[in-house]
Amino acid sequence: MALLNILKYPDPFLKKKVAPVKNFTGIKTLIDDMVETMYNAKGIGLAATQVGVDKRVVVLDVPDKDEEKRVKGKNLIALINPEIIEATGTTKYEEGCLSVPGFTADVERASNLKVMAFDTNGKPFEFEADGLFAIAIQHEIDHLDGFLFIDRLSRLKREIIKKKIKKALESEEKAL
Ligand code: QAP
Ligand code: CO
Image 1 (cartoon, protein in one colour):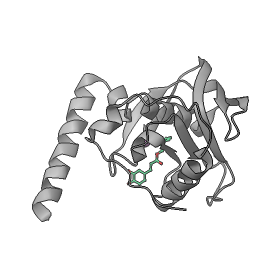
Image 2: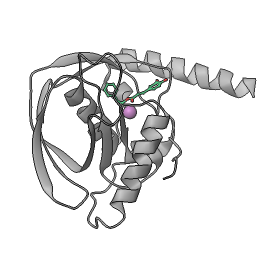
Image 3: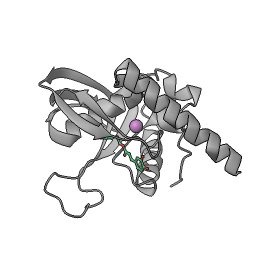
Image 4: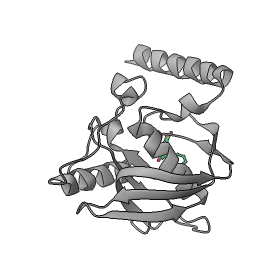
C-alpha cells in the first residue's frame, strides 16, 4: 500500500482525458493505493487523473444520507472504464474536490444515473445511482475527461472562483 500524490489545480495533467484500461493486470494495486490516498485525504471519491495516472479508474466511498458517522469502506467501490448509460433529472449540490482544496461551489448535475463499468477482474457490471452517489460518479467521470467542478459553473462564477484560487495560491507562495 502506498500514498499517492494528489495533483492540485492548475496542474495541466488534470485537463487530460485519460485512457481506457485494456490490460487489467496490476489494476488492483493502483486501486488499493487510490483508496488509501482517498481515505488519507478524507475524500469520498478519487479519480486516477488526480494522482497523475493515465487510466480510466475511479474509487468512491460515499456515505449514506442518514449516516451519522462515516463507516469507512461501507460503500467502497472501484469503477474501471465507467460509462453513464442513462442520466435523468437534475440536482444541485455544493461540491468540493481534493484537487481544489478549500473551495466549494454549487454544481448542477443529473440526479439519477444508470452506469456501466468493469470490476478489477475485467468483468462488466451495471447499476443505478441517485443522491450524493450519483453526483460523485459524475464528478469523478468528469475528472477522467479532464474537467473539474469549476468547469461546470457559469462563466462569471468560474472566473470569480478562479481568481480566488489564484489569490490563495499566491499568498501560499509568499508564506513559504
Ligand atoms: C468528489 O470530493 C465529490 O476542499 C469528492 O479541504 C464532491 O472527496 C463528490 C475534500 C462533491 C460529490 C460531491 C475537499 C476534502 C474532499 C476539500 C471530495 C477539502 C477536504 C472532496
Ligand atoms: Co474532484
